[in-house]
Length: 243
Image (cartoon, rainbow, N blue to C red):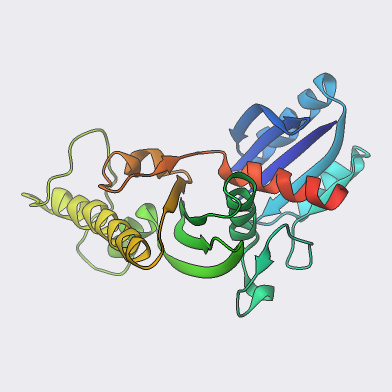
């Protein structure tokens, strides 16, 4: 049995091919490339279900998949979940966060787990050792912080980060912006992790998302970096509903 898990964002698409619950292949690209990749996957796998987690506009891609006569399941707030959802407004909970908590449930049932997804936004989602999703936090991601300072001021340039070290004391406008964004976000993440550790024993911390690898080496707290955590959670929800 082969499932295709699709993480459909605003600008990027990520595929995970699961065969008998094992992740066999990962692919990432833009939407036009994703359509071509799907055609190639059909040649090599007999896909039973295409499960979609869409934080971007999914209508065009869903229509394309259905025209291929593939079975499609789009994750929503109405989908049955393998954990207890204690969120105060479950109908507003992002499907990406739902999939991440499902990944925590699959891999760490009976444990306190904090999942940090460092993407366009940074999301913090906490599942306790009773397997109840309690909620979390949302803050701007790295690129959003850089763009905000450029777009909401008259004089600050738009900068990015490369491979160079980010010092705490910036000695130019560029390096001061880099320090504020990178070191500020690292301090935020470490501070929130410390709070959870002080309030919940034996905490497991998962870091994922597009900026997860960049941030992981800069964080002081012990974490597990897993770039495919959302895909694993999405496939777990699919299997949970099928069974």
